[in-house]
Length: 290
Ligand SMILES: [Zn+2]
Image (cartoon, rainbow, N blue to C red; front, side, top):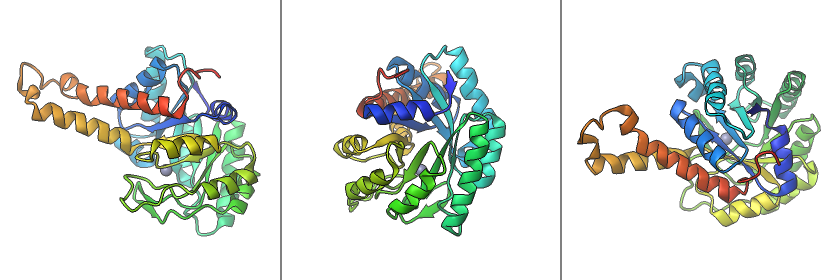
């Protein structure tokens, strides 16, 4: 059932687990995410950037596919349809298209004051419509949708200022980056996480760049107040690895295995399997309506 993400993340924060937020790329991707969540009776967030929405022919197409699949597949767990790293303009488009949760990423705005002012405006608009809001303080390292940032540590005082606007959950840099982590990565900054958590109280925090962070660091971050973990690259790697193995085995040349429903199945089965592993790592299995 499609809901906003506020309640599921408050429950996660209280229960010391995290809800996975998986980025979707197409119908089968969404189907795989929903399959994994339903099988494990876990809440889940399906999210999409503006770039991935453009590929899928618009925010409305993405939202309609998620909504219709939840209906067709008789999904019983809570599912949020979330805009990932929305610009100010993207937020209005995603709201109009039927997303149930919005991330306004004002971390790239010219000033922190502009981030604050626009976050306040988006919170007011979204809460009026029953949608949840994620905001961001401090850039997340790596590149997402062409936006590069240095992965600074978020300033706890700025986190507090944004939290006071009534956002439902907050993305804050703690040494995490998007994409694959470099070999010389220094790991998450738990000191920074502790300082931020001390400022924002029980506000659920979001860890972007969930691909490739060692599981012990993930678990420690969850125990310290991370309640939503974004995963994109990890599932893409699982998909491409399975497809590569399928082609290299020559199975695609047998019978009618050129049929896309057969050709792409190993990749999507791999996405389901990997999503399930992550849901279990994050501890949200069995927490459907917790
Ligand atoms: Zn991100």
